[in-house]
Image (cartoon, rainbow, N blue to C red; front, side, top):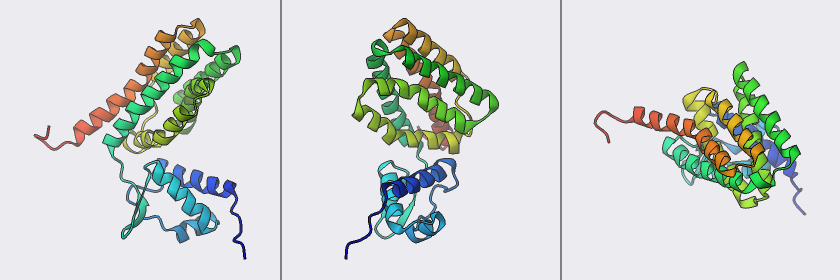
Length: 223
């Protein structure tokens, strides 16, 4: 007999639910992840849950060990810092490639996302702010049409968002509102170098948070 075909939609659903729980801390660092239990809670079969966990492992959010089982990965700030270096470089590359190719509808999307981000920050809505921030930067990524660039950002972004949610517990800084405005203004002028510089500055506040948090974690006398 042939095994039933699992719908990719179920796998994606399991992935989104589990990823969201990890990023918000509902599934905390070190929590054990048992496929049977998760499948029961999600009302899914084992296969989509297993595939979702494998994808989360590839993103660094889940650890699978032969004798220890599967668990939520510890929050490692050094990994978040390394991920930020990669993500910042990828977004700078996207902006450098996209600015001269932006159409009026792209500028409109940038302006809309920037406004939604500002509204969410002022309202204290972390989830909406993160979504709008991702949508703002994704305009440039989409215009490049560069698949590997997008895949790299998708691969490493969860490590950053998790650090924001679990360690810093705050909205993206209000400096990001200003940074978005500078990026948008430069994009409208077609000024690639100014847009790249503003993008670099946009990510620098998170870098400062990570670095300060790592300093605070060090034992007295530790370099």
